[in-house]
Amino acid sequence: DVVLTQTPPTSSATIGQSVSISCRSSQSLLDSDGNTYLYWYLQRPSQSPQLLIYLVSKLGSGVPNRFSGSGSGTDFTLKISGVEAEDLGVYYCVQGTHDPLTFGSGTKLEIK
Amino acid sequence: EVQLQQSGPELRRPGSSVKLSCKASGYSITDYLMHWVKHRPEHGLEWIGWIDPEDGETKYAQKFQSKATLTADTSSNTAYMQLSSLTSEDTATYFCARGGVYYGLLLNWGQGVMVTVSS
View 1 (cartoon, rainbow over the protein chains, first blue to last red):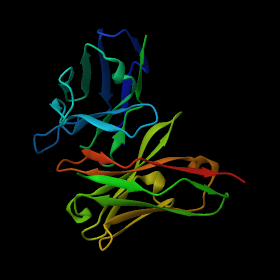
View 2 (view 1 turned 60 degrees about the vertical axis):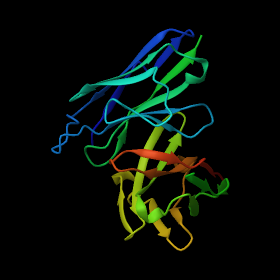
View 3 (view 1 turned 90 degrees about the vertical axis):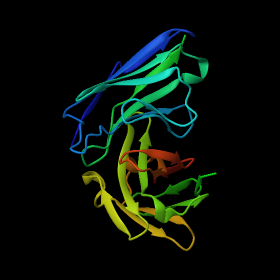
């Protein structure tokens, strides 16, 4: 199975600060169809996860544009440009290129 | 508006089974895969498997092959997951999630259902 390693496991930020989260895959996530099936989800405390980013860099519907995704192959990054209080929670990268679907270990974002 | 309404919290004894439901509204469940995901705070999110309600095809993560059984009832637009031979390791919150046009795209999530396994 593909292993997704997220760093850091925990991040603490002040309001307005920019934050980056890394997701490294044990295999390339570039599919033979040319797509890279890498997603980012946020699970706020006591809530269901929600989609932030799909196909590495495409913003989910209704997701603020302070969120952005980048990367290719095995290395991917989620960036929050100007953290807001509502951004606290656990961020997960997910890959769908290889079966089975796998989740990263999560990065907990705390607000100082 | 797409909504996934999951059944209420469950308390079960070790060795028993439980069947969870996920009723969809705002779309037909035959249009997309339905995924199930396990959450334990100390372990994060784990993908259990998916069902294609249109033809009943299923796919499971290896560790859930003999633990979970996914079914769907198209007449009620509802997906189900049965968990068998429950142990304390199955104590968790379980989510259903609607798939999208890309594999791994989990567009809408249920509110989650807490399953507690305790003697």
